[in-house]
Image (cartoon, rainbow, N blue to C red; front, side):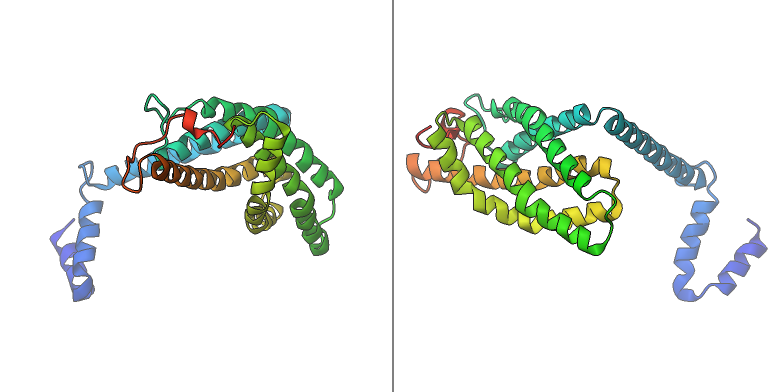
Length: 262
């Protein structure tokens, strides 16, 4: 940069903005230095490359959803369910008897997600989409949300609670029914708050083949929070029972994770 050009910049730039202009000029004129424009280009290129890789992965995933919908949903749901259990245990500091967060519930949740949750969601959502196929009016969209909340969600939540009871150690019909009865309305209240928003978003912005994975992600976030909160409450109750209010803060063992009486 010539001296004359630098003087022109100093003359035309207001005093308060001189430092900013000076810094920009330095960045643009340091060439291949560590902070020069070539460094900026490298950062931009890296970001673009990551974005292209992400888009490629997403396109591959969507292609798998179209060609093998049930298998892809099963793999997705199984992975998210196992990760949800692991993260909830980590957040709540809920360890097994060996001091690990990877408890026996993690593979059980993977089986539930892949073999129960995904096929059920695939079947129910497919029916819902077929019933309302081609109906794009506001009335049809509202009716779809109502049907989802009054028919789809109760079925899914009942199966979820029953499965969680079995995973936790329930072995009789009475134990499973008691768990479903106790947890049904709290879970439904959460569904009635989140489901309309999620479904309205899906109706507006997402292709139908991506609905189930999208709902899986929503369920993953909410489920991780609820699971971690439940684990924390259970750990606190166990500490009060076995050690008193000032007892140990270590996580419970896997054996004590079972519901009372199971």
